[in-house]
Image (cartoon, each protein chain N blue to C red):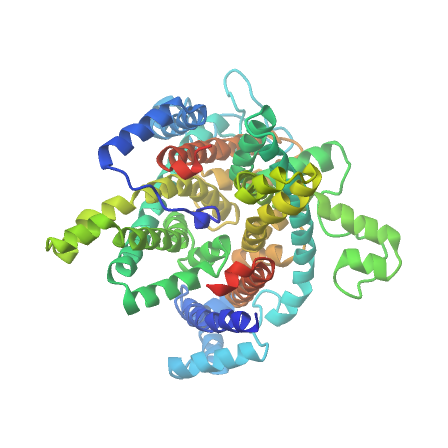
Amino acid sequence: MLGFVARRLALLVPILLGLSVLLFLWVRALPGGPAEALLGERATPEAVARVKKLYGLDRPWYEQYLTWVGNVFRGDLGVSSRTQHPVVEELLRTFPATVELALVAMVFAVGAGVPLGYLAARRHGTWIDHVSVAGSLFGITIPVFFLGYMLKFVFAEKLGLLPTDGRQDPLLDAGHPTGFYVLDGLVTGNMEAFGDALAHLVLPGVALGTIPLAIVVRITRASVLDVLHEDYVRTAEAKGLAPATIRGRHVLRNALLPVVTVVGLQVGLLLGGAVLTETVFAFPGFGKFMADSIVARDYAVLQGFILFTAVIFVLVNLLVDVAYGLIDPRVRVT
Amino acid sequence: MSLAQVETVAPEEAGGSLGRDAWRRLRRNPVAIAGAVLVVLFVAAALLAPWLAPYPPDKPVGQVTPTSIPGPSAEHWFGLDDLGRDEFTRVLWGARWSLVIGVVSLLLGMAGGLLLGLLAGAFGGWVDGVVMRLVDMMLSVPGLLFAIGVAAMLGSGLDAVMIAIAVVNMPVFARLLRGQMLAQRRSDYVLAATAVGVRRRRIVLGHILPNSLTPVIVQGTLTLATAIVDAAGLAFLGLSSNDPSIPEWGRMLADTQRYLSSAPLLAVFPGLAIIVAALGFTLLGESLREALDPKYRR
């Protein structure tokens, strides 16, 4: 098992190195050149010269690259030209919000998706099956920002059931020791803040979780259908095991293997979708910050955030592989 | 996209009968019919927009103020937008832009991906290694973020959006075609062709490639759906053209943000249009896959 993890980790090194080269070249290919791009509208000739010297842009490219990689390893991703704060600071400030949002979306997707997919497979060929297949195809195609608008309009503006935007009611006097607002409410014992933070997560969480939900339903359904026809299920039935035992121990447990992989793959989708969802709900997370940085052409932020996302994505995929290896011993051999 | 990664190998049957078989199954599948109807609707709107649209897409045709935006009426089926332009006309013209962006980005992405996949699949060895590491690298950035990066680098605009979506789709096609070609390379008919002395280039281009294309066609149809949704997403974020006279669905949605409480329907029409287009290609692609691949038939 350790060897398996080590091999997977070793495979990541060239990918991340290559990616760093690409992102480094990306900044150099930006319109107007990196100094101008970093300065944005404040790019006077003197300022450009100063930034070039400051960032060592007058030195050969390989020296520049090594300096940049060195800085990245020391946690220095540059300074946001929009807020004038270090990119790492902005990342640490905004990422907890997105983690909360992504968790709610994932809980929604898996919590509703696995039972629905299972039900559709068990009732294969009935109207329940057809509705869930059609519904999941529809769910995959619905643009997340449009769904966000509709949810916001109906449940927040018309019915007034949930807050329209933000992470927390600004009038609430809530402390934030961890940066995870839901957790903060629990830690500080402020139940009102806890409930409020949770309420702010419902609509964006559902909007963000809909595509993963549709995918989880499909995969669960297909996987359960596959497993139901396996020999070992027939054997279990033949030897007279209770149907509930067969369903739990044999069918569901084996059917969930592909679901684990697919859930891991959704992390990338969630981080991308967060950019759109957080914009719709003015949710001050990583995605909203990134969307604002696009408008402001804040390239240092884009570079740092994209690199960070890629690292997270690659690590989550590694975790999924490892988890898979733990659940299914056959994987480790190959 | 993630569904495509759980692809399986297509059946190896004789060319003619497989095609005829698939066509028969496709015609009998209500899902395929529904998809085809939506696609025809979308493509017709796109092609015939200049003749179908009752008003010019870029000029105000009525009086509006931010607090009173007229809704649907007999003259203006979808009402007016925030600048007093006919919303129905703009949705029709939007289909045109969506189709162009979708098709161009798909073709570019397919061409790039197929080239990479062909290189990797035909040569193997170190070429394969280099190409596939490049593909892994591209897949390690989540699609939409990747597209944002590329579009921002190109300075935004319609062509930036098309190239961005194309680049994001390239690795998917590359991996798909390579997997297909590797599977085909070990098949008996290739062995037979090699044995009778057919040249390598002819085997690759004349035998392996055509037999590997089926899943690429399916993937292409499905990618058209995601390309349309992604293009709308990039436009929503302000990465598409700045020209307000271009009716682009994602941008139309973003522009109506401020009027959500006074004129919510302005967001509904472009949103539904995106869904119609994307759903059409998704349904068609899924049923195509089912018709061509017995593994998906249930």
